Length: 230
Ligand code: ADP
Ligand code: ADP
Image (cartoon, rainbow, N blue to C red):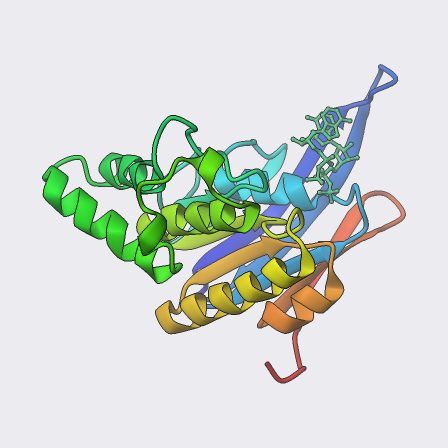
C-alpha cells in the first residue's frame, strides 16, 4: 500500500477570457511509496505547483482526491510540511526562534526547554548551530533556505513538499544544499515531493520522477523510475 495515493485528480479554473473553464489536468493517478524521493518536472504551466498546492491542502481539487496515510486530505496539516521558495521566515525572530515557533505549533504541550532542544537539533542538522541567534536579515540566501529546511524537518512530517526550493540560489550553494537534503532524506527515509525545472537536479535527487507534459486536452503525468545511479 502506498503512503500517498493520488486518485482521479482534476483541477479546472474559470477561463481567464471569461466563459467556461480551463482544465489544468484531468484524472491524474499516481502512487508514492513511503521513503521515496519524488521530483516533478515538466512544461511550465502544466500544473506542477497546482499539484503540490493540492497535496499541501492549500488548494482544493475540482474532482478526485488524495489519500495520505490512509486518510483523505481536506486541508493543510503539519503532517505535510512545505518548504517555500522564498523561505517565508518571520523577520523579527532568530533562526532558532523561527523553528521553535513551528515546533510549538506541532507540539503545544511541550515545555519551552523541550521545544528549544528539538529546534536546536534540527538547526544543527543543517549545520546552522552557530547562527541560531541571527535574524533572517543577517543570514545569506543559502542559510535562510537551510533554516526553512530545518523548520520543515523539525515537524517530522509524513511528507516533505518543496516547490523549487533551490532555484533562487547560486550554483555552488545549490550543489551543497542538494547534497545536504539528499543525505538527510536518505538517512531519515523521508518521503519527499519536490518540483524542479532542472532535469539534472531531478536525476541527481529522485528515486522516481513525475513527468508532467501537455496533452491534447490537458496536462498528463506519468511516474518513471530514475535508473541513473545516485
Ligand atoms: P506549473 O507549476 O507547472 O508551471 P501551475 O500549477 O503554476 O503550473 O499552473 C498551471 C496552470 O493553471 C497555468 O496555466 C496557470 O496559469 C493556471 N493557474 C494556476 N493558478 C491559477 C489560479 N489561481 N487561477 C487561474 N489559473 C491558475
Ligand atoms: P511557479 O513558478 O511556481 O509555477 P507561477 O508563476 O506559475 O509559479 O505561479 C505563481 C502563483 O500565481 C501561483 O500561486 C499560481 O497559483 C498563481 N497563478 C499562476 N497563474 C495564474 C493565473 N493565470 N491566474 C491567477 N493566478 C495564477
